[in-house]
Amino acid sequence: MNRIAPTALYQEVAERLRQRIFAHELTPGTWIDEQKLAEQYGISRTPLREALKVLAAEGLVELKPRRGCYVTELSRQDLDDIFPLLALLEARCALEAVRRAESADIGMLKTIHERLETAARENRIDAFFEANQEFHRKIQALSGNRRLLSMIQDLRKVLKLSRLHSLSLEGRLQQSLDEHRTIMAAFATGKAEEAERLMHDHLLSGREALARIQDAGGKAG
Image 1: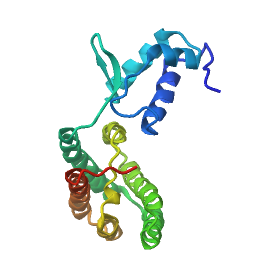
Image 2: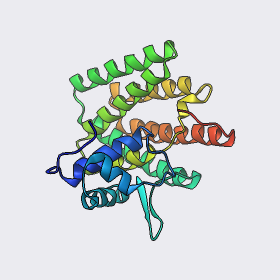
Image 3: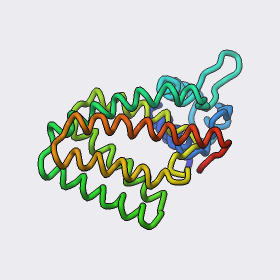
Image 4: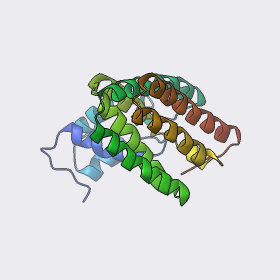
């Protein structure tokens, strides 16, 4: 059922569109047909336009004068701009997380890491990706720094626009696992500065893998 109740706020419209963008139902570069979407959802164009303003502020769509609204396309430069920032932010999260983590928290991280090990051993890229995401989210939550978390979420939200997947590069899954092992070891031994450095390098390593995919002209789903 696609129709949205008339009493729904524009935030609900924004969330529906956001999920369609993340699922690549609305692919990067796609022109957004406001009239068609308004009819599909059973709403006026006013809440739709408000929703698009929200998505534009998040960097998910671009509002072009006299041309309409388009789903954002990430360029190589966009990725070069985003990853160093993400590396700095997530590295700081790792530092703060190690300092705050208790034994139960380390145990939870180890459990997630075991899922990474299993997925890598069975060469299940999707399962590895999901466990990887959870591992990073757990560290971010452990940092207890909500402003850091908010900035990271904003950047990762934009990265979801990319159809490239670093884990599709040959050898990257094992490399990523090795990087996670060293990060996990730093947490287990309480080495905050080492965890910070390793997380920073891990994020930049992911960007390097994406660059090699781009150079090869490859795309991943």
